[in-house]
Length: 104
Length: 199
Ligand code: SF4
Image 1: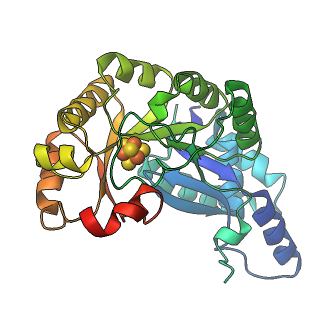
Image 2: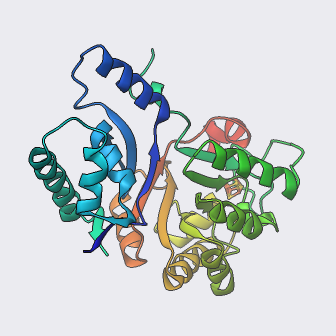
């Protein structure tokens, strides 16, 4: 199965401090869906990925297929496999559509 | 006031780096030419690159002064690129011929900005106090373009161009420039003394 890889032209960075804040907010039961922990600079514009999006982005290093990414996340999140697969696939397809990720 | 977005950044996104205040030009409006400062050695500059890489600062933009006056610019840029940073610079273009453009490309420059203040050669040359500056700057844009480096154009807003931005944009387009930046005049350094009379 084809592996998922990031566009090497995209400059990005994990924001550790933000990630810690988000994890703490999550513990407090807050909604963290729109809080970014990974920033991407694409064509001079900054974008953010939320916690789960950031995990997926980090996993797409050219060594994992979509199945591998789902499997890795499944071991970390307590979500039904089918739901997780559906969400990850939708997210990955969005980024592939933007050209930020590609199947190599 | 704290900014909730930038506040949580672990480090800056761009490091604007004045390697040297020296320049082969002597523009009347220059904010840096009156500065005198001891320059760091290549080794010290590499230590700064190490620090930036460690902190995950993704972009370095070399400015000055004229960055190409430093003979170790290529070495520093290669070092920064090898450490995962993205380098760009702003230059007056005088020293950027085809060979320099190739060297900039091979040392990892992603983008180079050239200063051009007017689409009228004579006006630009007068503003920069350097006959031939316009011809060299446009030739630099072409050489960079041919070498495959993205180019941008920087213009200081002043009396010589405030009514002719369209022509500046046309000039940029004719030379394959991807972005044009308009800068405000900085009232410091030499710019402070000449502000009233000539800008
Ligand atoms: S404005 Fe730029 S080109 Fe002109 S003297 Fe200053 S550093 Fe040199």
